[in-house]
Image (cartoon, rainbow, N blue to C red):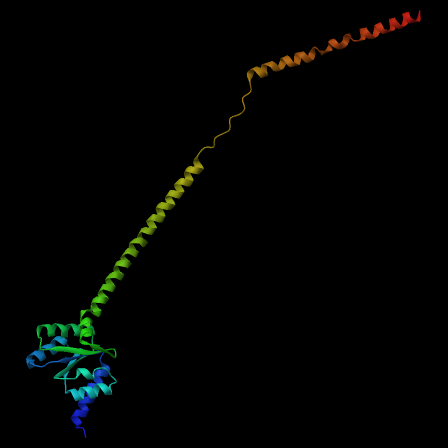
Length: 225
């Protein structure tokens, strides 16, 4: 029959598996208590660095439904249960392991998926959520600034365009119309017009025709004699 303390420990570790966003399994063989204390301080309040027997941790993982970690529970085991930003905690563990080679990162779990040691180190290489948010905010601010500049420039551009259109319209309406030249009348033709009238006035010369008609009766009289 399991001791009440062991049952309580398993239940507590199982809750940590359930409630954490990620967990990293480490081996701390040879590390001093002062070094473990320094590591806990570096991890901060968002990460619980729990030391427990492998049998208890394995049972707690099974109770929490976490799979794929059984092979990691060998040697002196401590699990970092991360409640904050996984990338930040992974960076702390990686940097501490570089400075203290006795700490060995063995693997872990992220969002229910098991990770090996290489994947934990890759997680540590990622930029933290705060850095990504800062970059996104900077990019959005730059975009908004450019948009504001464009929007502020639009009224002046529209005003200049309107002024140019008004000026062009005014020039078109104010231009004088070119009158077609009147046909020129030749002075010589005007002066020659009376001459035509004088020719018409000479027409009465035709009145001599009755003389021919008078001669015709004389010939008829001779024929009668």
